[in-house]
Image (tube, rainbow, N blue to C red):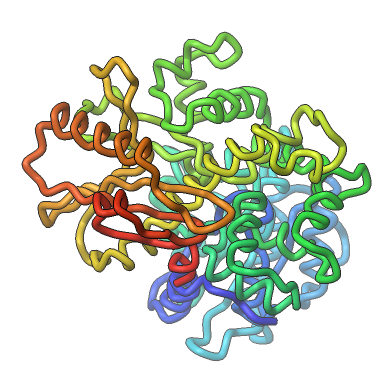
Length: 473
């Protein structure tokens, strides 16, 4: 099978294969983003050992599955291990065998433990056994590459990435798998013979968020609108209950995560931690800190600070298109058909907000188009704290080369044509931002329009024009 994109991730795996030290690699990211697919396809499904955890299975069932994997790879013990210490002891014996498979590039023994969090059932000794396996033996094996992954991100973060105990500083490489870019979405659709225009691909991203699993569900015989209707609005649709299934698979108790996302969906410019904590069903304290970190690590939100605020005023912003789509249209369905939403006021508002998320998720492409790929930048949204009109700018790129790009993002069916009213609004935003930021940098207006721009006498205020098709790089 073909791996689309994932250049940096494949490069990281190759460096781990070629390294001369033991490697403990954690591949993580939200559900359905393609973690298992990447690892399996990269190694052509050839491992020294592979096993996966089972959903909703108790310790005995997990050990039985692990033992079946051991037997497949040559372990002669037939009985199910009595605990995880015995299971990992058998794995060690298997890996020390002369018959164990080694990858051909650097003769490494590659072990892939998939859905690792599911193996750690309540009151089991799994974490202690894995800790002992790595610290007592595996960490001294220069030719060993251990790869683990799992969709239960809260477990991954708590036990592997931020743990101060057994696995602290044991992980040698983190690979955070993100959704596809627009370019990668286009490649996947072409591979699946799904025919869409670039404008329709952008709209599909606004709905499915570049998640490969979701896009693979599209029926090439149907239009985009028909696919959305079949997948999301029909009771038999594969994504009918996906929003809640997604969060209950990622987090043990996702109720507060869902409440945070719902709150942020109503404030596209973002909210401070203090603002979020005022919601009664969310609250504050260490639980909010943990939930925000987990949502950030999964790519559902981003945290940013701009130079008119201090660190305590950092903002959290929703950046996952599918989450916004689900909250707006799936959580409380007003209609049982996507077609009934199209061109409604709520639909048009959602399109504008969702296209802004598309742009935020393609900052690298925007920088490339602006010719500033190698220049250090800080990106944020901005809201006036002094103006009575609550002036806000949805995307600002603050550059180290003495320029600030104020980005205006527009989603229209046809070419965007600036009118006098919008020209005056942009002028006001520019004036208020200059006054409040007290910046000495040059300010460039950048207009990003989904379907291009029709230039007129008002468009002269804009220094840079970017169309949706330009983002496919």
